[in-house]
Length: 65
Length: 149
Image 1 (cartoon, each protein chain N blue to C red):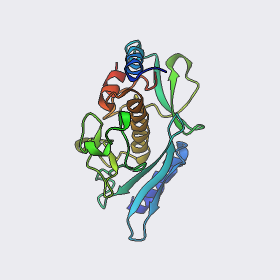
Image 2 (cartoon, each protein chain N blue to C red):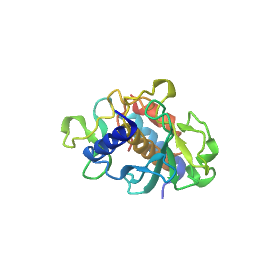
Image 3 (cartoon, rainbow over the protein chains, first blue to last red):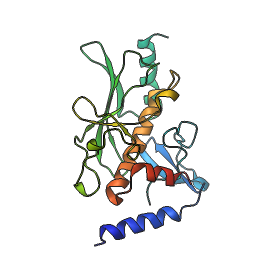
């Protein structure tokens, strides 16, 4: 089982490897939750939080590693 | 458009956007609030509560995590409630029962054109970031800033 330090390191590495514009978060109506989708494969049609709505949160790439 | 018409419109938007877990309700005292249980991508349930102030929609409504309360932070050594107003956690003053208040919009940028579906969307994003915090210990603001790149 990974230690907390290892988990943090892995999460940070995953964040560092993210590239802008590759994916984004949308609200999936069918699942009624937030999901990350690839920009190149936008199957889910929902609210785009990278629009000017993103005030405190600013444009996001994605949350989950 | 009067307040009742506006709130009816808000419910219609929530319905249209598939956010049927949330709805505007009226209390016996004549005030209004938005309430609902949301499940994060990981499937964990959170009850959200946003009492609408008398000045709504010109005034920004507070948004609370009604349940769980308290809301534990990374490592279960400290609650998110204990942060109070925190840029790092994107939180404001706790609610009447100590609930965590999510900072969903800057007061100076709030205006009557902002609809509640957008507020609830930010709450859902905050919850996803919160669960990342639980897993890694990273402050929510750090996650959010990193995610802008």
